[in-house]
Amino acid sequence: MFGTSTVILGSETDDQLFEALKIVLASFGATVKEKNYNVVGSQEISVWEANINSKKIRIYSETYEGLSIKGSTELVNKIQAKVAEQVAI
Image 1 (cartoon, rainbow, N blue to C red):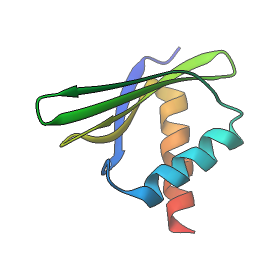
Image 2 (cartoon, helix red, strand yellow; image 1 turned 180 degrees about the vertical axis):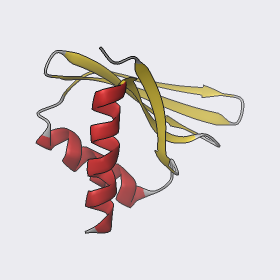
Image 3 (tube, rainbow, N blue to C red; image 1 turned 180 degrees about the horizontal axis):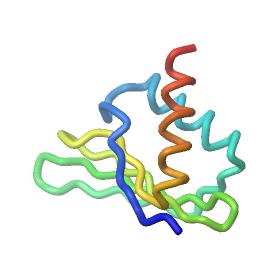
Image 4 (tube, helix red, strand yellow; image 1 turned 90 degrees about the vertical axis):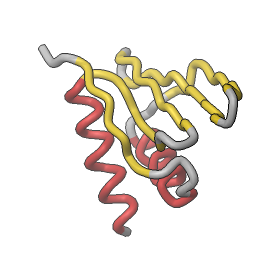
C-alpha cells in the first residue's frame, strides 16, 4: 500500500499547465466533487477535490506556492508523469 504525497506541478499562473492537468484528469475519468476559493491576506487559494476510481485527490492552486496535487503516492506520481508528457506536446 502506498502512502500519500504532495507534488508541486509548477506555477499557479501557468495556463498551459492548468490545461494539461485538465486533460490528464479527464483521461483518468476524474470527477470533481468540490471546489473552494479563499483569499488570505495577499494569497489566493483554490482547492478542488476529485475522485478517480474511488481514490480522492486534492488539487491546490496557491499564490506563491504553485499548482500542486495531493493524494495516494501511486496516483500522484502517475498524474505528474502524464502532466509532464502533456506539457511537452
